[in-house]
Length: 94
Image (tube, rainbow, N blue to C red; front, side, top):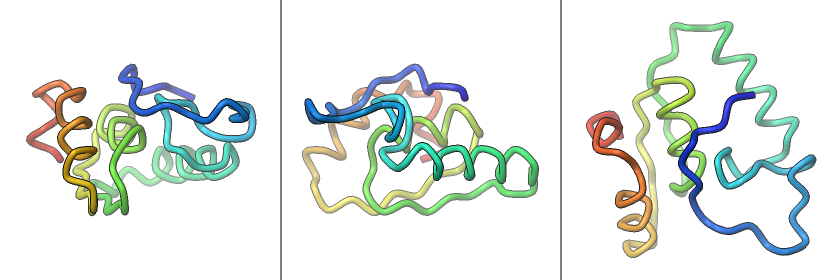
């Protein structure tokens, strides 16, 4: 799979990247990432994504799939941190 190229956040020390996504992928199980990757790449009609909580998944879906992403985030400081990491070219799609 492709990585976003924009590491966001820090995973816990006990994190296992072969089971969970890295800080350049959504923080969900490897099986979920694979499922979404295969589903979205086979169904190019999808252009919009709604996510609860922004972070590495935001960068991943913006860059890897070129989707329009709407994030619902409760932590304003975290939102600003993510915004500062993402290149300006993605901000108009987020």
